[in-house]
Length: 139
Image (cartoon, rainbow, N blue to C red; front, top):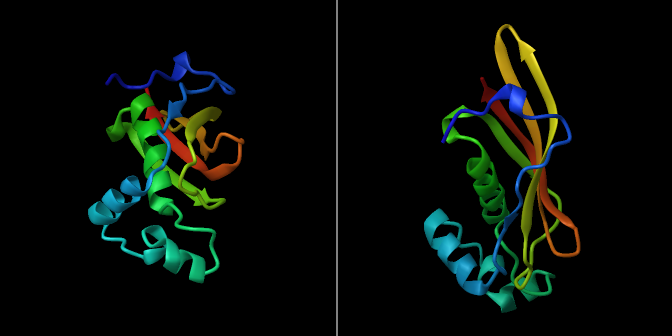
């Protein structure tokens, strides 16, 4: 992937969205195995209900990983200076997420060109599940 060109982006510009398939139980089981996070609220509906939930919920880090996929589809991983999100709402089975990004700032300091992007994962109703910043070193 080519390095992001500072002059080719403008504040307010949006990244191509990333549509995530409907979250199914199998996604959470696979993620639990890959991450080692076997908290039963993610894979045992009875346990999740006893914990006060309507059923199992997605791992927050699974949602963050989907936002990360958006980031690396747009910028080269080696140019990412920072990526972080805050979890805003629980993601339930059956939800379909879209990950989006909007350039919110670009600046040059001490010869370094930097682009900051607001990134979010939203469900079909527009509810933000996770949101944060992606900071890219550009040329």
